[in-house]
Length: 154
Image (tube, rainbow, N blue to C red; front, side, top):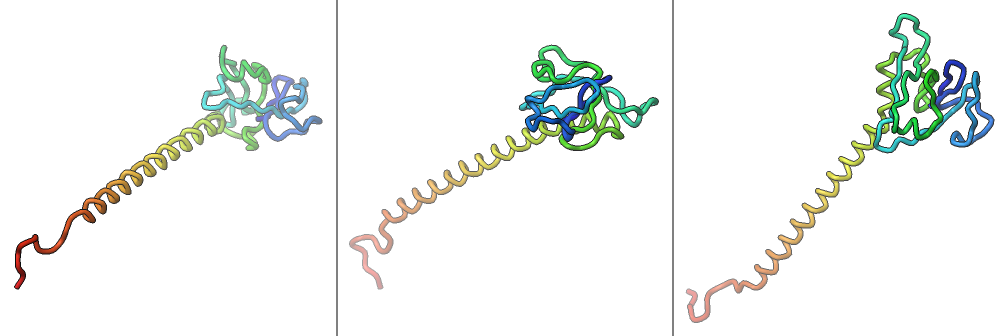
């Protein structure tokens, strides 16, 4: 994510002198790439602005939620302008589009978890069916086919 506040930082894809976004200092007035790993949680921030607003000046951090991932990370401040999210430029984006981009990794995380659950369920179902087939063949092989003892065939 890249941000540039009322003179501060910038998300994903900037020109910082340090290659690791986690150790790069955030300098007022300079675009800075920051990386925040939110896991399956929200970032804990609110944004305002976008191309669909009257002033059309960009996307800005309007609030950092207390106890959220963004507050714990400390890289973002109220007033930072977000220039890109996940390497997508949002300088001319709508607020709604920027919000969707900020939620992408959470959505992908849930889809991955659902796919894993589905695959796990399929493996269990196939294992159960194989066990049933083995038991059926064991039962069938124990049955003596043909005429019962003492009967005669014509």
